[in-house]
Image (cartoon, rainbow, N blue to C red; front, top):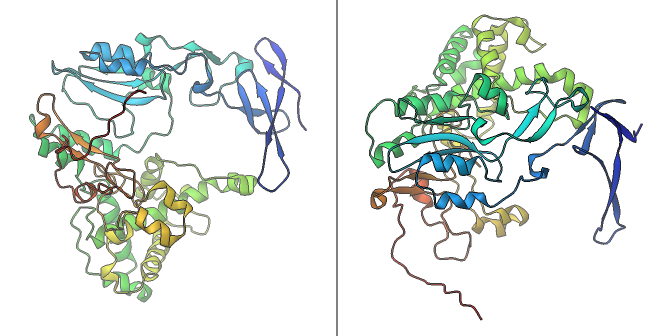
Length: 445
């Protein structure tokens, strides 16, 4: 049933239907009907009486402006924070430092002012008086200014807690393992050179996965009487505690965690996926480890997939699945390194629209790489550090800069891919540009 009215805190209002004509090549035009409310377009009908409308900050008056450019003129962190809280840009982490040695963190971009006492982690229910009322005052925006230990870090994880967290909500924070490792690296010394800070960005120690490695060894030992797992037991995989490209042991521990996490996630979400069918998309549950690991340690059965009654049984089956995955690649299992699994796949956006033979020149060479998601050296086949930069004001000549794929976006440019090898291998490359080879002059007519 399609409704024509909806409830507000002041009473009922009419749904406005906007029709957009979509012209198609070689076919008849299609009509897209959009149901609009005062909060935004209706995206989904939950049932016969409830729907979800999209209220996006970018649609609100004053959401977009050019205040960001004022950052070029500020001289200290206090002025920078003032600009940050008025800038009309999507919300992003901002870390800022000035010549006085002061540092600060905040969210750059305007934050809606919530009213009402509804759960800030749940969708707004305007009919109950929960809504947005303009923008949050700049002095109310969460900030961390001049921290006593003179250290700040984000790593796409939470920076604030308690009341400040309730103000900004949870948009899907990463697990805090990478953030914690960066924090500990920063607190391990009082002074850092450019090379020291680059080393932190390249830190591939597998501290988070250490307990999964121990679980892997324990599960394999518990299955010592199963001849089917002989190939896995025969692997000469010494644990070196790093997600290095050469490491087989890291791939084993990482593989076990991935299988367990995937199966438990599917089990927890099965009622929803069965009810929604093809409409269901598995959400990213970055914090599931906080539930999963205690369940494994304490053998809590509620998180077990339905086919298993004990954790030992489930872990045994997970090892068999892991071994099967490794054996699906031809060759000796001792060659199943993490770098093979984590090999780079970095291409120009146009490559996705072209046949393989034409797309290949638009891609960087695929190479085994170290690093992973839950450590400072974040790296995956198609994602990773979009840049690495270390520079101190007044010491630009000693600064370092890395960018995957290089800075040129033109495949026919002689500079196509320049600097990519340095990013790949973590070798220092200069922050400042080299000598000028070409000059482009724009003149007015």
